[in-house]
Image (cartoon, rainbow, N blue to C red; front, side, top):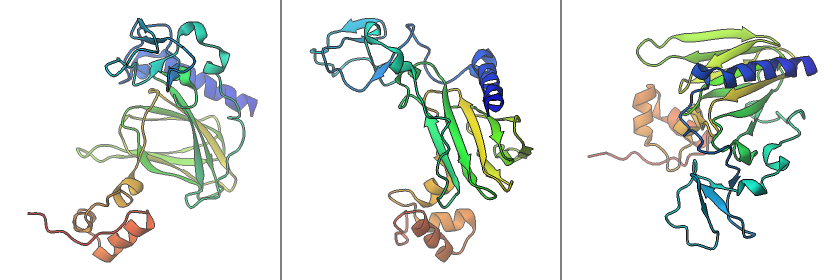
Length: 252
């Protein structure tokens, strides 16, 4: 396990150090670091793009750094830069047979302005799936630690090319920003992968969930025509994914 983790660290370092791969849509930092905080309790100062502001001032017009207040750098400590327990296997007893554990700015507040984050993905034996999804704000580099994964991404409408590969432990694969991709465990044992993304908050759009589980739901007539499906199938899928089905509405 240690050797596999070292393989991931090496791949992750390549992503972080290569300026072509590491360029991101996140704003560049204007100071050494900005430990994100959700409030300004305990008399802390906050640093906003280089300006120190007393917390007892009204901050209706304050400037945020990537949408976050910054803790006074003098109050930062090691816990702001730390996360543990990523070595613990996650429960994959769910309908899709996988669990994604994100380590982004919500888990490590120091990641604010660093344009990088990490995820652990656990897959159940044969059939564990990280379903088709996309990251609107980040490229992803994935390394397999355990198991055998069938992975793919699909290019945009111009060519619609299906890029696919079978990965084994130590193999690395890159998913370009904004393209739909998935991972599927084709082995008879559990699988584990780690992925690095070049955004502190890459976002995730799971295709089936957003199409059939939106709230309010998409008009079933739209989905019936778009997917060329029977309307009963569309309404069934909407109920399956948690979207409340609605009657057809004629759009004038």
